[in-house]
Length: 118
Ligand SMILES: [Zn+2]
Image 1 (cartoon, rainbow, N blue to C red):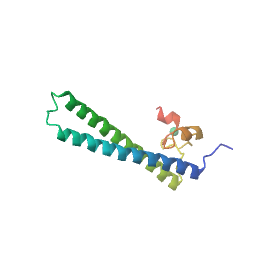
Image 2: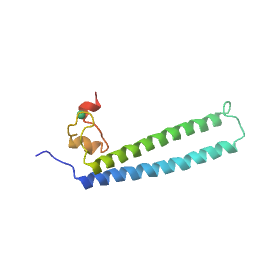
Image 3: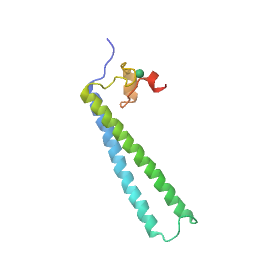
Image 4: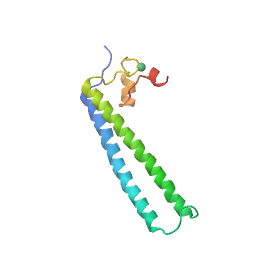
């Protein structure tokens, strides 16, 4: 018999990932506010002041990180939803079971390795 993943174990792993992403998202939000506040305080213009461009760069980085965390949370939510509906661990494209090792490495994986690399 093929090795299967324990449903509760998977749910726990996914919830932990979600918690981490939410915590990072909150941290990023606070950091972004600090950067924006710092930018507001500085009376120099963005284009010619090296510090201004650093602030713009930091904001871009934080925005990218925020976007990544939101995506990660959405992926985890989708995986939890599949777990509820009993479709977790089934490849979305070919309908074949996703190998347990892949799910261990990527608990929110939607596709098998073959489909992911296609
Ligand atoms: Zn597949």
